[in-house]
Length: 456
Image 1: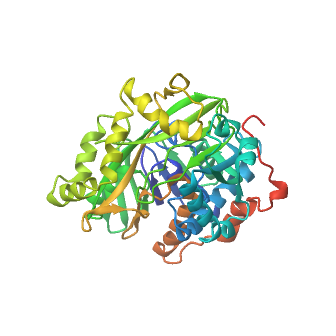
Image 2 (image 1 turned 90 degrees about the vertical axis):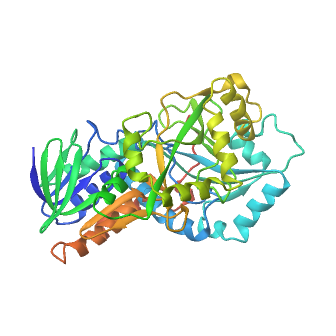
Image 3 (image 1 turned 180 degrees about the vertical axis):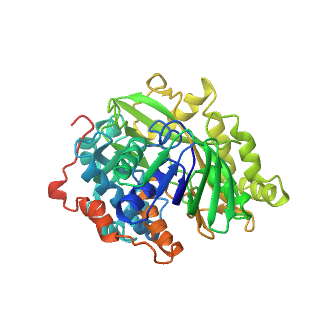
């Protein structure tokens, strides 16, 4: 198996699949291939058990600035519009109420300021500030058993999209392969990438692929490949493994708690599973792991390859982990994985959302959770909180587009614009048709957008 293509995309997760869909459907590139090392599309972090199934708009993510929320909002609306257009029976997604919950005077004041003074109420017209009675109507368990003297406030919206990103990636690939001159190769691992006079040669376990332009959308492995081509030398990875706890029938939709702005990881939230609303997930926890893929010891060597074992990398880790907020957070999250002790330590996070929860109500979700790489800038000795993308000579490396799957289509849009520049005007991108197929289907009116409970 081998071939010559104008464009080769490495990685069949949600990011690579979104780019395949965008280039196959809305450009006139002559030949496009997607190469995926697993036997199935979206088998690693995009699989529905390995992420929190959240479509992030920036409305209830309280660690987002208004500027970041504006950027994320468009990307989320693109994906939501795609789902509304191509999944009308909601087989790959569900739409439910979602809210961010403030408990106590200090948090309530912070949330009110965010909504009114910071402009989030203006940016998100469907976002409403609701108090105890309305919270109880939508999420009875959030109020049941809670101290009545504690002030409560929530910012709530009906745009609580819960997404099976693996199934969505498969949908992107199905759309793309309806077009001519589009090939998808699974069980095909890239072993080497070499720059040539005409572009790149990819050595794989199934033969060689030659291409004029390449996009590496292989998650954590993207930086590994980039470094082999002398890109990204000032970056290393801080891999964070997320895990979840499960409970039965606690919530109808998604309930966030306020997040710490200094941490790039989501605060614990609860939400009903996309395919089984009787199951409520709580998480994610965030544990440092020396691997690029959860549960795969073979990727320890890959991590060390990316890490580099040099002084700048060690100093960067030391500087980050010495932080008085981050270090206790990291240590606490290690405890959550311990038998017996872990659930007891995690229970207070669940009780902030569902006060009546007891230890017997929650259990660790075995087999759930993936690895999300955080980028470390070794020049600044700090976490890079932005998007991790490297644009080289006729090649793009997508490491962890922030915030991940939610902006996969917007990321694909921007990459396609860059590809058009790589091809020097040889091909065209019909961005208007792309928007018609995606964001134009996002429901703007609340009158056609009822609040759905998980069992509706």
